[in-house]
Image (cartoon, rainbow, N blue to C red; front, side, top):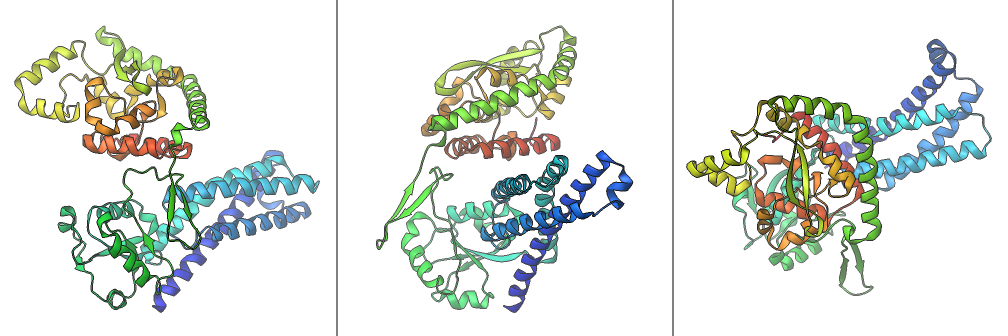
Length: 480
């Protein structure tokens, strides 16, 4: 037990020290950038600190202290949070800290360079998250950030919990076993898992003691509610912090508010449709409009070059196909043509004579080895450059930068009762399915991902998906 406490303290100390060093590096490099601009690189590194630099360092140190305490208060040095949630919190705190710093400089009437202030905080926005990720990875390799974890449950909820935890390696939660209460369901996929399935004993505290008190995640299915309540009451005496993952599939989780009634064991979950709010729709549309305009402005030479390359066979460069938009309105979805001119005829002939191709087309509305694709089209699809003309759809308001995958009329039946979520949003150039495996994701998973996106929309998630899309396209994962 002593080793775990020491490891936890060591990890906290390393993360705090890393944040401090990142801030100081941003300060020094920002100062150097300012002096290099006004003087020379030699002066930038050897011509300070002067009296003004010392005053600036004291003020900035106060801001660092406030930021570190704030990071501590929201659990950045102890709690295990998903990367993008912690990154979002980090950026918000840094923005406020930068505002505090600028306010002190302004009202203090100190004659500090604006370039110094601006470059320092621009570097802090980059260095603080990067250094923290680097330190967490180092701590994981050394075992200081790794926390042995058991999941109580082995049903579908436990399986999803395990997949979610494994998708966030920087959380450091290493699942070492599933503890199965008597009579609880067991997921078929977990039966094949290399992680052991162990029966939960009637004295779980003794069992956890023998396992050296690992981190506990309770992820039972809805039918095990009574068992869950009993376990929480029992374990919460020893475990100050317990992770409980309730079975809430289908509910909009982002923005959910939890209210309890004083002296009553009643929990009120307030769920909301984020995209149903007028302000949210306006913010999303404004973001789409500004970004699509800027991208069209910057990328027009790329458009011209690709169009010339595609037109070498004498056919049009742009292909337009009808897709279903928001509220069921059809629209013409633009793409760079990646197929031969008589693609529909070739497809019909192929499906008529090839049973495997018919099955694949019926299942995915795509073919992995599609004979209709041209050589330049194969490159465009691998790199997703064929979708660049959809920026015009976004600018016109028919599509969004991020949203559900655009579908044709024949696919609407595949969405079942979740079709309403699709029709709530504009289709996107990219979305959750594109960053989750793209064409390697089966159709039912695509539907679930599209529905999850609409239920849990936020502008921050749009930005995250766009950043992840760049990585996926660069690695060409799941593209064909």
